[in-house]
Length: 281
Image (cartoon, rainbow, N blue to C red):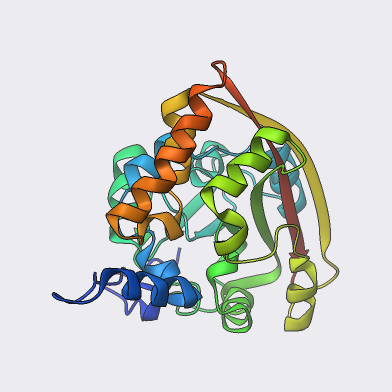
């Protein structure tokens, strides 16, 4: 299976420590927000349980497409990179595939183990995968590729895939054409701190690696129903909110809670699943 039997070096994507005692909290937060790599490490160092509760899973349509495009089924060797709390991994495991999860955040790995006990996981980043060449038939990455050093991560994905192996990158994007989502974006300052442009063509990034063949991009719409608490927790689970000093974080969350208070439950949040699939060239 290629799962390491000893602790592997996990590279630079591990949980980052908090600010040093006496550090200016606002300056420290602003420095973190300006550094995508640091934000990716710091923003998910805690709060995995909230992430698991509030974030949407992946629609049946999305998963049927990914499983079909990569040919995932019983005995397929799959690596789910940046698996988080296992929202995608659990669907892969249900197919009977032989699945390993890679996740740099200790907080996320702890929640993962509680939700999906028995599934192998390693503390590793996409740029430093502790597996032998050709160890897997498919690689999946959900809601995370934008945090990676893309050239290095894609080279690692290509290295660990066997002949004809497939790659799938998946995002659940909030549909900002919806007025509630648009207002949520404004209040939560997503438009100022998003780590990548909404709707970005990651197919061009995959093509630039030279390792994968033609990229198929597919989109599906779906809706998540949440209560008011979950509506707020979704914002609270975002990396750029987690690193804010308490006063700034609370101000944003109070504004979001006020928006939620004026909405009927369940609140419908529309999403667009954005999926990129390719096979080794």
